Length: 96
Image (cartoon, rainbow, N blue to C red; front, side, top):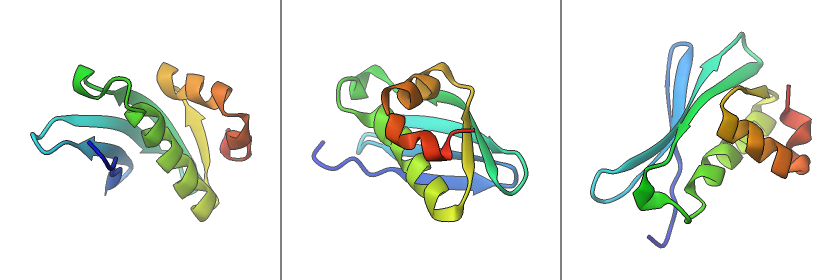
């Protein structure tokens, strides 16, 4: 896998960032919207096929980029996302 493309799907008050491999395997990070200015990351799942490739951190990083661009904050309830926020203090500006 040369390029890790992270895509966004939103439906009402829920959404997900995901990466899909050519064989259909998906890594995803789901979130809920709490009002207009807060995203709550509630789950991250990265299949073994993607482990060690940075897909999980790329999912969180994309959410951070989008939150910055739209003036939103992120509450990382998912243990993986919370750990990534601890590892990346430069993301503190969007942390709720």
